[in-house]
Image (cartoon, rainbow, N blue to C red; front, side, top):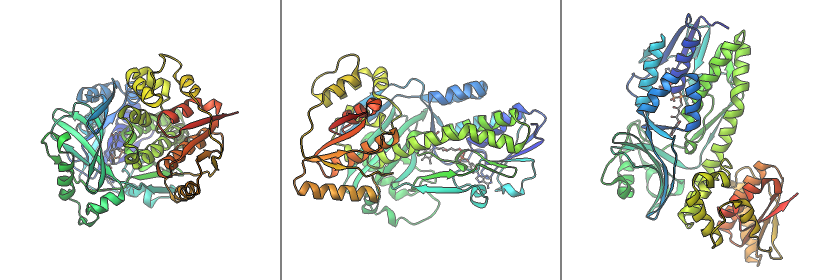
Length: 491
Ligand SMILES: Cc1cc2nc3c(=O)[nH]c(=O)nc-3n(C[C@H](O)[C@H](O)[C@H](O)COP(=O)(O)OP(=O)(O)OC[C@H]3O[C@@H](n4cnc5c(N)ncnc54)[C@H](O)[C@@H]3O)c2cc1C
């Protein structure tokens, strides 16, 4: 189809990139972006762009990608616990300052002929265009006022996003224990002399530290920033934590039953969000832009184009949202795993959402995985056949394991609490441990391993998880990550 006038609401990465790609695909179309902020003011510090995203951007728009890569800062990934460090090499993960990312996207949009309008809050309904792209972010008023069947879930933990005026050597995950509880940073460098620090904690710690009594306003929460600066003083090497409208937040996961209504289509965070711990919000928004423009180019009218866009994008978005959900649950319960050696904890991190098979991780980080397997088994692994080796080291389960077959969605919710309570009672009555059984599909097995881990941590005893032989990778990862002590393969 050939749109004549397109209005894009929101000049974040999704809106700006969609505007440029639209103008390149339909040179005679008028494309305007309406952004409430000023060109050089934005929230946040840096964003990460992984290899897969860079490949997609390279195919859609090599010029923009070239500038993004030039502005980015490559880094490896480290996990540091109690002074011990596990490092994973990552050749194509870059951090880019959000300000720089937006400046590049603004420049390329203008170069393509897009008109950019800053400084006024607009409403999708008032924009005069045959197509309105609503890229107005996680708080999208378009979504809230329209009929998109939106559902918003809220994370249990609290996080705040701040920065520091020095560049870390690598991305860093690090927990710090204060008198109030554990705070964990996800930090990474994103330019010369700049790092993002995203710091999260659980609600009880947050309350004990008195952060629930911080007055509500829109400026940065300086009390929390100073507290965290002290807590992470060693990591910060004497530098300050810097806020930019930095407040404690709970992550909001957005799902919509439909992404379009009339001539308006949602894109990026307005349509869906995925927990920050998989670093994919910018990627999803920019890939949505690619998908939308392809659908418009290949179909005859708006309803068909919107249907095609949604059909193309929804499976990838929902898959990432599910990975992000598992990742969020893992991070929200992270302090419970701090007794693990750091290499084993890194394996648990990499396999937390079922996205990275153990052997693939071993192929990219052989020394780290060999150390983790030695920690797990007490003896070094062979060079190949790791899954077979892990699964072959299988002691005979003791008699008297109590069977638990609850099917839960979220092992850390109140249904999970009830399972833990029953497991504790069974332990008091002398049960040696538990056998977790249930459906054979992969989602069910991954959740069962997570529930087993929680019971292992909170009720103790020997834990056995049943799972299909076809899912041996997940069973092996569950053992090495200390989610379970034993596994039993079923048909
Ligand atoms: C703590 C945290 C860490 C993150 N880390 C990463 C990361 O490492 N990697 C990554 O890829 N992503 C990360 N993200 C996510 C990422 O920032 C967003 O997913 C991404 O910016 C979404 O792009 P967007 O264009 O959809 O929306 P946004 O970037 O939110 O842009 C929406 C724009 O619309 C404007 N707007 C809203 N309403 C109106 C209106 N009515 N009129 C005019 N303008 C309007 C806003 O001012 C804003 O500029 C993180 C997010 C958070 C919260």
